[in-house]
Length: 68
Image 1 (cartoon, one colour):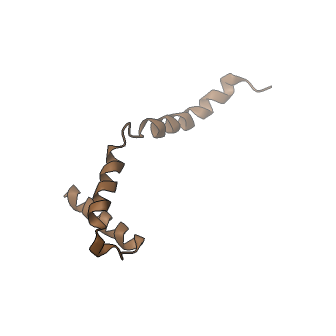
Image 2 (cartoon, rainbow, N blue to C red):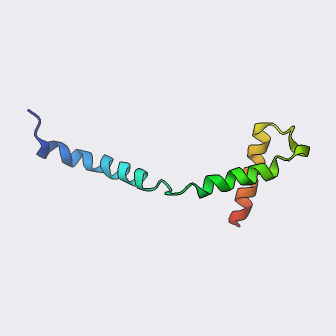
């Protein structure tokens, strides 16, 4: 027979990590909307030939430059 008293102490670390991950999810979508906006400004008619990897690299560089 499994006794809850013996099971719960071993699960506390896993539950704490799960709670941390759940509560760290942003409550708004403003960040992703900002990224789509920047992507649409970057991918103009003149740059429509960019492959997705190049676009991703440009967006990453722009995001990192904002951190400085």
